[in-house]
Length: 380
Image 1 (cartoon, one colour):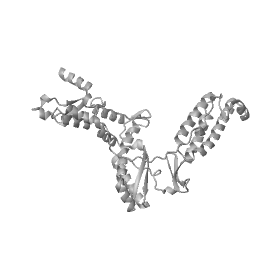
Image 2 (tube, one colour):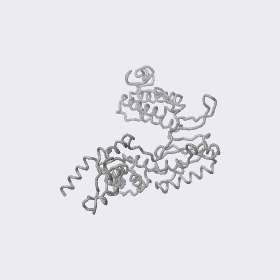
Image 3 (cartoon, one colour):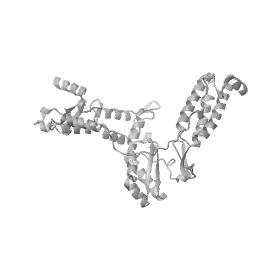
Image 4 (cartoon, helix red, strand yellow):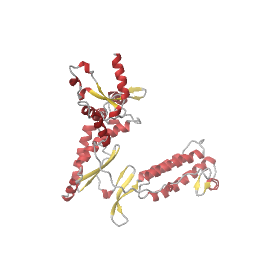
């Protein structure tokens, strides 16, 4: 996506939230969050689109809107029995993977013209639904044999142990260049007053985080050996400059069982300390829009509780399902035993109880909120 967090439509965000959250107070808070504005050179500029960069709920809001793209792509592919029929007829099929605003679509049994047509359909969909544009620089069509970069990994076809072509996940060259730069920044290019122990801890933290992210790559062990060498010498040069001594004296004083550090217990960790972890699990089938709010036995309990209350039992269950088993006032999760069916407009304002007892005039409240509302209504 092109500038996803800066360009995403406020209308799309609020529309998606209203599909799941039926709480006007909460929706007002989200709207205030989106419309709060930004400071540009000490001038408050109103925000008419986008979400605040670094905002605590910005990734969640963007992901909720882009979930619409998941549903759209799911409908373009064949699944179950139709997948087998498409295979037999040699018709195109597709699967997709998405992480926030980065995503890939994988197409089988199709030519480049089909891929270009699909890309155009996706472009129109995200423009109309999310108010976003595709990034011309990052969006491209390629063949899997040529390989492609995704989330700092390089994916390509390679020869497996059985001599057959299999997918390979490798650490991307850009990721290797970035970690080399960050090692030098963390170890060497620091304020002169920062002690060696602090640098050792920061470098170790950097190595652990990077290794745990890339340990699923097929070439992780090979890359880890190279980076261990680079991290070692980055730390040696940092200590040498800090204490104004030669690298030989650094090894003599700070070398502990093959590692550089302040003491034997406080040394930099190695990339190769993290074990490579290949994950061969197949993807879980995506099921858009399917939400499980209550287990079957809870539904049975609801029916058992209200089976002797005609006209109220069905309405209560319908209201609970509509409100997604949450209190409309405070938003807490409830079930039948911990909630009350509340009339929005009081019953006495209608000609009959039947007119007041409609789904549009009732809401789900937890016991506490219902008690507070009843108390206020009594005082009024």
